[in-house]
Length: 155
Image 1 (cartoon, rainbow, N blue to C red):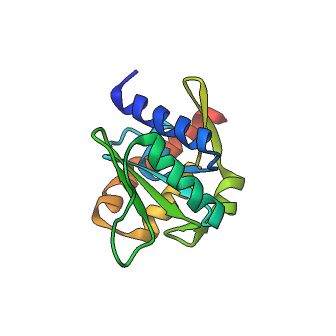
Image 2 (tube, helix red, strand yellow):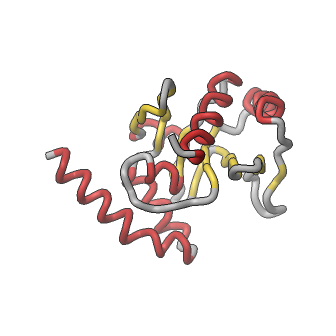
Image 3 (tube, helix red, strand yellow):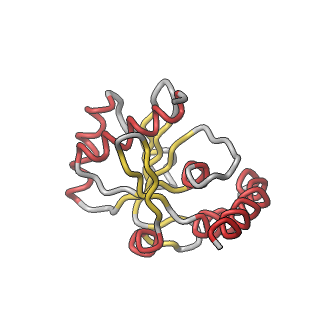
């Protein structure tokens, strides 16, 4: 197991232990579905509720790091760790993709003894298209190819 996989497993275990229902989104979601890309952080989507905000305080304690707001213009929280950043987004991602819709189309991916709830590759692509950031646009051809291969293998 790579250190990157160990980090994802550690975070997934901590989320589970804190009772936080989270969907893995972004590049890690694509990676877990076979896309050959790299990333420097783990993005998860959670519901923004008072109860989850309390559970996130517990997550900070479990991970031994304090969450910070990444920008005054964003509600996204970041928990920086020595290995990678955990970015926590709330309710919706680019493309107006909401938690409930993403969860209904999500896939489950085995990660050691854990099971990750992962945004469908189609939703990762839609989100990156909507975000339109240069780093997202650069990944789109690779993600579309990975989706074509996955569909071919499934049929």
